[in-house]
Length: 87
Length: 377
Image 1 (cartoon, rainbow over the protein chains, first blue to last red):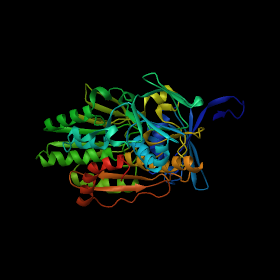
Image 2 (cartoon, helix red, strand yellow):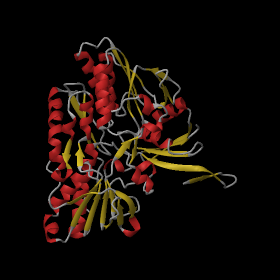
Image 3 (cartoon, rainbow over the protein chains, first blue to last red):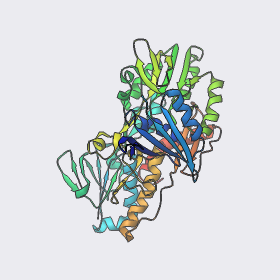
Image 4 (cartoon, chains in turn brown, green):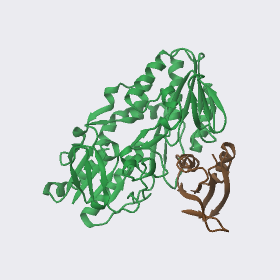
């Protein structure tokens, strides 16, 4: 999907969904590490995880490596972790 | 009905034999044809490479003639596909043949891609091909003292391999009286020593007990071969005397060249195993983009589901089963002990402490695999 700027309506970046629901191995964080190499700097990813540990684990890694955590929401047992590639 | 399987590895072979058994009368009557196209006349048991790299298997044990594994009702050709013409329900092969199908299954597998990390290919040892596994063993055999670092890329095939090679090498050196002279250092991309939490809970104290050092949240960024240092995306580094890597993987080039999926991974429905947007194309094994282990058992269980479903399509026009994400991975926990992890999309693994019994079961399975390939086990 393309993410639009809320004020101008212009396309800002690509947002890719990474569906890691039910992934114990390699797991949602590993799926993110693989997926983030496949997008451009500035692009966004939304990781879907059925493991509540992802809500803590993924932001910890993002903070350490230097990518941006845009926020996490939970809906019906699925955590949506939003990420922007920064480098 | 024409069924075409592209790929003569574990997934393609198990699926073909499964279908030959289920559709025996249809194949004999000519109502159905079943063709396997492969890039090689040989079938390789790739999990055996770990044992080659640690001096516990020889290379001749890894191979059988693919034709000898396939049911005689299957047409087998060594003629790899170069073009997938999915809208025409055809493929074109290297020899120039155009082959049509009604149902297509793609099981082309994956390949190591060390080129993703600058300096890795030139400076690291690997064990995911026969040539590199033999080279690694020869280097390990001659290694008498120093620091061996194990580092990996993402995604990689066989998620247990990083732990297994580390523990097996630790036993290898200790059995040769070099335990105090060889230091093993393990790095891992996420915040624990294995992505499976229950495996990490067992493995971290096991590393501590053995004196294996480790650093987590270490994603390879580049290798400085002159200084013998690896650098991580997280800003840390580790020096080495020998670097062993489980490099990142990609799907096969033919998948990328035909624009079937980025990096060679085909978008696949997690339960039906059809290529997204294509009801007549199925995908199995490493070739899928599913968030599950790229491992032989994954392929095996997917092939069983697809065998049942494609046979049901032939017999009454509808599939009958959903793939539940089932995976079963042996974990070789050193030279004489093993355990396993079994899980699916909904049930996490609960590995038990390693035992010698499970080690011997794994050793036996290394031989029994040829029955699995034939669709008998």
